[in-house]
Image (tube, rainbow over all chains, first blue to last red; front, side, top):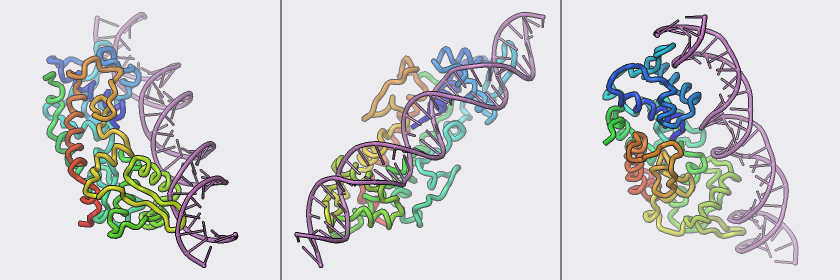
Length: 138
Length: 138
DNA sequence: TATAATCCTATCGGTTTACTAGGTTTTAAA
DNA sequence: TTTAAAACCTAGTAAACCGATAGGATTATA
């Protein structure tokens, strides 16, 4: 399951991407428009800034803005930062690999085999979709 | 993330499927061979029986056995029973649909659009893999 | 100087997860 | 007929995680 954090984060990024001008967008505006608890959203925006997706400007007239072009932001990257691994099991994760305690041999593990396929299918979809793609309303 | 419950359940089913004869397999045997806590596994086996994947025989020499052929058991079915929805968000789930509280319109929701694609990709993989496929050691 | 925004730290109630404990019931074999 | 081995059942529980909320500190603009 996708956490609310990730869901809200994606919605917020898409909201910012949809604006033509590159003026900073306030968290309060996004929170109202997208029905997200403001304080919770603030913490998410902060995380998105610290991980290099957003820049921010403090004080009156401040807000958040995209650092890269929407077309250059792959959804794999967004989800990895907000949610963590894309794989359903750590032992098939490319970026967050962990060995299972049970399972003496991954090569003969039935779950492993299956989850590699699922991972690759998800990776395919999330890798070919950029923020630009999902922000467009069509 | 796949829960341990689901992971253990799949491993147990695969273990049973790998046996040539159709004699009942004890939970204790699976638990030892696959390094799964026995009591925990028992509860999973029970669930797999109640949901129609396994039959059971009580008493000495008892155990669990497959009711259908491994080739007829799709992984979508197994995961839906043990884990729940395959979709990452309830609003794109085919079997466990729920509307989001935020989100006034699913058709213009950026997350919705993306997650439908992910769901379909996963569904494809899990639907074309049967227990027979994943139980084979190749 | 007042205001509006981000930034930071801490806390918290609720839910889920992965078990564990302690039995009861059923069946086969001795 | 007894004994052992198996499934079956109910309950509880420690730890982690989630989705917030609280309360302010800091910074920039008008």
